[in-house]
Length: 409
Image (tube, rainbow, N blue to C red):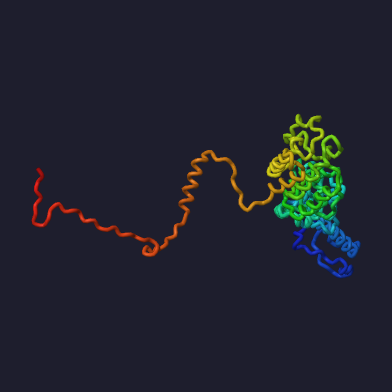
């Protein structure tokens, strides 16, 4: 019998060879392989059943199902780097999604922030990755928390920052130091990075971080650094700290151009070569500025002017005019004037000149008259006003009773 003559696998049952006795009489189909012969019926039956069993085993092996990939059961390929390798227990073998957990080739993990258990990967504008636990960043910024929740992706969640000025690797590293409470010492070499970290914290509304940043900025004023009062004033202006700006003006006497090394530019303070109008032609060394005070905005570089919020810059420029006074011309008076200009006012008046001043004043007078409330008062004329009655004058009569006037001759 050939393999094609066997019934289907579902209806075929393999005989129990061990239960067959060689001496028992069985009915076998009439075929050349099962027909008994005179030379040995028992041996022929054993040989016949053994051959049938072997063929049956081969037939069952040919009908056994094989696992082949189909559209319903895709192969999941996990590509991981050394920093993203997980234990086999963390791998979901029943997942039907193709997950790519490896970092991009142009992303290099930061030396400090590379937590293997981190579920958040922040990628800076210059291609450096910061792998941290998201709970610290999400607690510090509501904006970053919303970005994290909006990304439906496997861990780690990736947030790409693309601002080349305030979202570079050095700035993000210092920002994360404040987020994790690992605040460095106030040294001169991080002053420029610190200014960018202030702008980064303001961009993402990290209020608790900004409070810590204000204390850190004051440490420069209290002797932590050797830079001039100009840089301290700019930091205070970006933080909205009027008192720090006031104290920086008070120290202007100790910061004179050409006399100390504190006038040198800090690292990463300026953005030369970018789309910022730095006014490089005005940044050349000018000997006429020697002996001038560094806090005076007329001695600043063009990019320094752009670093200061307009309200603080205008208040400083107006306050510096006090120095022209021969009597009250000290920097103490300048600082006092600046503080007065920046003080909050109950009402904001519009002091800009108006094109039709005369007509406006006339309209104001009309409005004033219209707004006057006149109270009605009952006056007692008898008591308050004395009216004198005039005597009645009788006209003279030209004739008497019974007489007629004679015409004159």
